[in-house]
Length: 255
Image (cartoon, rainbow, N blue to C red):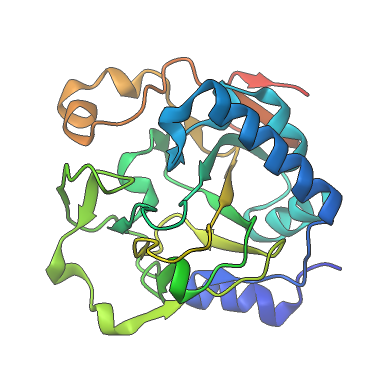
């Protein structure tokens, strides 16, 4: 089932939408196994792995889900690529918080454009630190002021300045295991720490229209990327998903 017109309008107006989608249980079990294998090799990722495809390209099978790609095509057009996938493990008791932020603050994509698919591996609730959104905060399509916060108990070190939003406007993204949300790159979001006895695992898939360019050279800008403490993007693979490279400047990997 494709997104309805109402769902597309919700994405445009609110900055996010929850499609009528449920990942098959057999695929969720495969994800769990891959994640466990990843943690066995890289225990440092027990809270957060910023780029799972760099360590296990097999995760691409999840990102290549035809229904998810159909939704993305409705939101950002028929020509797009996958440029990253992250795993937020958020284990019980000591699952790290994610500060309020906009994703595009630390991504070398010009012009900035990305639709993120956020797949819940566990039920995601306020009790275990579900994602929170500020509805409509994407409307002006501008990056807001962020500050550096190097608290080791945060998954990211970029935090939105307090004057840029009102936390009272936050809405909880409550999802069942296997559900997804789709959100705009400029949408303000974050999550609380997980102090519960239940994990809150999720995997993100980052899709950009190929009218944009993933600029591998931009990471060499020391003024920008030393400040952001961004992950190294210089050798990041950009995977073709659908259509063609409209910009003609993305070095796409075909799968």
